[in-house]
Image (cartoon, rainbow, N blue to C red):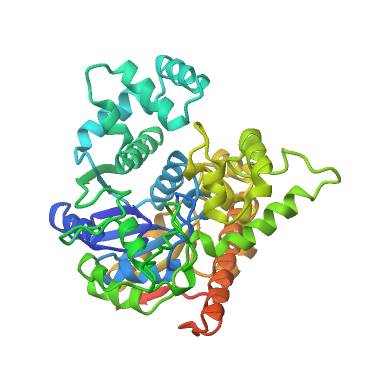
Length: 445
């Protein structure tokens, strides 16, 4: 049985994702397509517009056979940590043959050569050049790009390693090489608009960012609530799906998008401010290191957050205010989410030291995927979780901590979603907030 895996966010699922799954069926001779899906929070430090169960169903209805959740510590990690967590999960399932990903390059051999030569083993020359540019005050992505351009003159390295999907693809390959994994990386050229594009161009392929922006287009078109690019949030509560996305997503996805309420960073603004003030004033004498123990914060970002806290307006505005030359907007958003969700550096290091993924939590499967599920349970080197409440009693140490973090993140997400429904005076599709401990795995025939 040929099993091809995809690491995804599907925020939301669109025609580019459908094209990838169809390409896998046609070119990889795949019997099963297995998805590792980020939960309720995304790698760029934003909430998913729809929860993981809605997005899992979108995937299953459009070609996926099995969907596992990527634990929140990895889903909200840097590109490297995100990739290491996802690849470790796939590797530990013991059944995956191929990891398939979209990229701007579309050239698996080129990405593999660059990764194997310079990044996977991190040569002394690369480390020296990287540290040189970091000391000059560059952010890590900029320092990495400069180091690679210096060491590989005459090659168009900068355009290769600055494209967002290429970056993730390189990190996937690096993780596979470092694990000596038997999983083969394969890429397909990304279709349509670029990852960061916020427009809906003519044709079928728009970026998820562009679709999100359209979904948050208010009735009063004078302002937007994207929650992702510094847009005005005053009309957040009038957000509604726009018919202009219909050509950019599969019909089943469009139907779900038309009948749901969406979340953006703005919806977490009050909760984040409360958490920041609570942590700032927790000690007898407030100190600039108040946030330093959180995951990927450290002293520098902690001091920046502390100094700018009196000017806090909302989530996105605060992230923009704190942005500096070597503190990117995305890293700040991730850090703020880490604070909001009580994610610590100590816990992140514990997972890294224990080889990342500690379990595989199943979100959903089709009848075709059910057969592979039996094989996974027989071959996986980590527990396969279908009932979180039972798993919490059986897991210990870093594994239990990670699952508790997933449950806590989901509870925060659904609490905010429920409050938004109440403010909008529109009852949610499911009147009772989901209890993460008793959620059922999605089964499609």
